[in-house]
Image 1 (cartoon, rainbow, N blue to C red):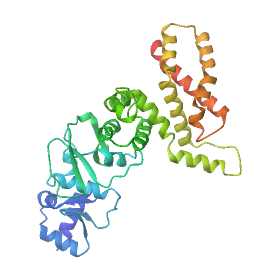
Image 2 (cartoon, rainbow, N blue to C red):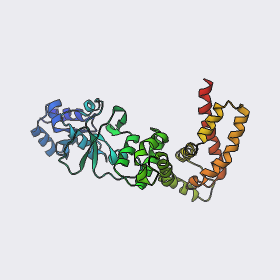
Image 3 (cartoon, one colour):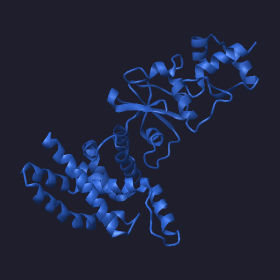
Length: 324
């Protein structure tokens, strides 16, 4: 008697992490609240919160709570339908967005959603922030609409998030490749004075945050583990090398070396002279970044090699467009 409704609900939940709402069950599958109760009593369904269920046997997740909270915001519509909107109702934002995107080390005990109009929540675990979002300021993360890293940083700065936590969010945001240091600097300009920088100097904030946050803890742990392994020569993991190279690129950008190189190319210097200039830049840059890399390596030769790689990549990026 209950097999038919259960199969219908399992089908409904397939595209929603195994979850569905009471309203969806009725509208999409014709399953009544009484049938839901019976299925729950028989252990076929698990009640996640008021009006939201998970099919027993569907894999659970640490994100089930925020997923169910999001489904409950517009319970009659399916997730797929809502995600087709230019800006879905209730975009995960602020601390919740940082956690879902693994940016920094913030806690998110309260589920935060950005909405276009004032709205009240019946749950003490949900809070709404009223703000306008454009279609380019959100993307899907594990099936949920989430503010992109740049917008997440901006929202956290506007909410007066402390500098120590925001620094790690900014560092990880740069590592995603979803935005640039220049875009972050521009976004942080209105809040620069709140973080000890000159008013309007977002670039200073970004530089300070990168210096404060250093490299991700995972990379430091990998380095320490290698150094403790019998004193053998360290073999850097791809993750650690990516972190180090990103640090080098940030130093090149924030120190203005990229502008120097662009000016040299614009001046049409002979390739031989340009190569000489690049070679001359390696040692001072390696010296400049060594303190930043000290958390993961004291190998000066390795640092110099990474600077050479970064400079060559920067050179190729600048020169290639001029040759097209």
